[in-house]
Amino acid sequence: MTNKSLRVWTWLHTWSSLVCTAFMLLLCLTGLPLIFHHEIGHLLGTEVEAPAMPADAPRASFDTILASGQARAPGLVPTFVFQAPDETDTWMVGFAPTPAAQEGAKYVVVDARTGLALGEPPAEEGFIYVMLKLHVDLFAGLPGKLFLGLMGLLMVLAIVSGVVLYAPFMRKLPFGAVRRERSPRIKWLDLHNLLGVVTLSWALVVGLTGVINTWADLVIKLWQFDQLGAVTAPYKSLPPPAKLGSLQSAVSAAQAAEPAMRPGFVSFPGTQLSSPHHYAVFMRGSEPFAARLFKPVLVDAQTSQLTASLDLPWYVTALLVSQPLHFGDYGGRPMQILWAVLDVITIFVLGSGLYLWFSRRKTRQQRINTAWTEAQDDGDAIQGAAR
Amino acid sequence: MSLWQTFRWPLAIALLTCVGLVSGLVSDGWGDALAALGLLVPVAAVAWFARR
Image (cartoon, rainbow over all chains, first blue to last red; front, side, top):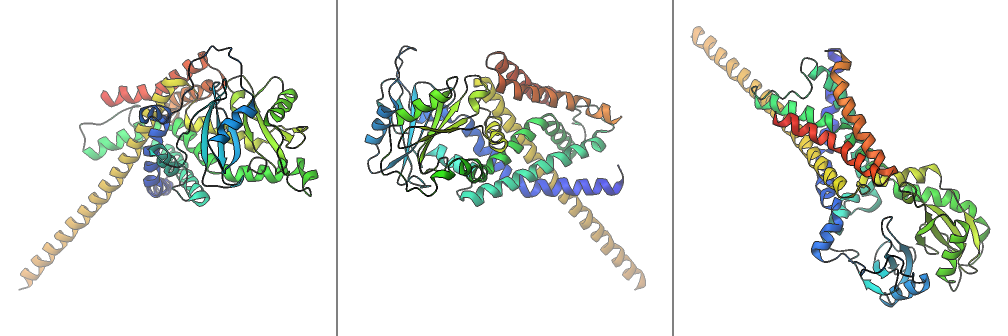
């Protein structure tokens, strides 16, 4: 590598990291409790759990589940019914003032077996909510998301430039060398290089999938205009239904269309993930990977007749795949712990990078001060000799 | 040292981490175990070299 290209890559690495470091530190710190949000919910008493029942207990009708939830949310309209991939005993029912409302949401957890409402997890309050909002959009909505996405891209640039710089810095050192006998700056430089290079692929995957997640709103909007718009075009001129048909009938129609899958999410008419005329029943497979993906089945909200069963376009699939790879919620407790440790190591990499920049500035300033003092001393000596 | 000698261990760790990240996605059971092992590699490397 020539001196010029080394300088260019060093400049790129320094400034791409410096600009994003404060935000990356914030994301790492807020991401840490989010890894354990279920456990923290248990500790805070906000996690709602279903009572133990035999595994083959019969399932309640979706109409019963919806009615139980609605009884706890008077004056609000249902927006979705959701079940996590590893959950079978409860459904979360979402409500809002209007189908398209972005605020004022209320959630009710309903027992999937008995159809009884079990509790109302806090919707827009509490420690985890604050951490989530800071992590996702800095309480700034879509602009906040896109800004964090930009910071994520800078982090990716910092990682790539860091890899390029790794070679000239480590050319004469064995892998993993930490020169403890040298100055603190050299020791921290070696630690920065070591921690950065071993967590390289994890940080790249989490960084890139995080960037993709910041585009979620745009991806969904694109899907609405693209695939959803084309399928629901014949309904465009019709008025929205005055009264919605049975939710259970809609889910049954979707189940009949995709018998090998199970419902994971139902979006109500008029919400972001459906049309004003349809229940969008998102079916998921039973295999671990397929359970993370969805197949939307559109059912006429009045007649409960099947409109279409769709294959999601690649950009929505990419978004869905990027979510577990960013959250690290797919490998049980060991993965949660390792995800947290890797998060802490990343905090260390960011902190050591900051230390290296400050210490280099300090060293440079000291050099300038010394040169200035020497120059002044020389000047005094010349003046003295002249006198 | 050649480029290969400089990057062979970082590359091996990166590949094993990727195998871990993907295996947990595609399979429960052995997939989760392999995921934990894959992600343990960078953590173990940090622990080993930082303590040495």
